[in-house]
Amino acid sequence: MKIVCVGDSITRGQVSVDYVRILRQLLPLDIVENAGVNYDTTVGVLRRIARITARQPDIVTVLIGTNDINYTLSGVRAAELRKKWKLTEELDADRYRRNMRAIIARLRTHARVVVLSPPVLGEDLESLALRRTTEYAGIAAAEAEAGGAAYLPLNETMVDYLRDSDASGMPYRSGKMLARTAAAQHFVLGRSLDSISRGRGLRLTTDTVHLNSRGANMVAELIFGFVTDVARRTEGIGSA
Image (cartoon, rainbow, N blue to C red; front, side, top):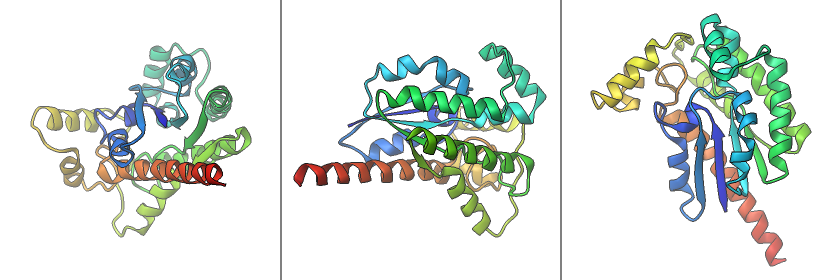
């Protein structure tokens, strides 16, 4: 079985613990390909659908939305994303909805589609950024159901974990300083991403955006559970 994982820098796994690598370890008999692009949005995914389907996947997982949400939270990030992706209309919740609908529809003609809800931004449950991720999770869930895609509740899993933790969480930081210093510590000084995360008092992320091992394992385990369930049901049909 070939699984292609579509997403942004969280999927790319350079400044985030690589959940695709973890998934490969969990599924050694399957082909698991990384189709993550740094700074990607639903606009970018739509533009590269043909390149994704050219890989001839059996399953495509879609973990996208973090930068769409970033667009709505920071004027600076919005300007950067407008320039990078040459956006001609606002990248708001309605466009996220429409883009997810189109992504699912176009991918479903080639493969089984699995939509994951966007991960948390920050770890403060009361913050605007984290609450917005839950809003977008609702959009992702609705579009997956309407479009006949499977849905994996990553955001909900993360929120439940944070809610069960005693300590108050760090809110999302819209600037790039935390990410840049994490990258410098990791690539120059050789510190692990988990060590950086612990030093900042973070539980799921390294910089309030990218994932530590706990967050990455949540993604991998959700996908692994889905794939093994599909394989089990397929074997059952074949043996009937």
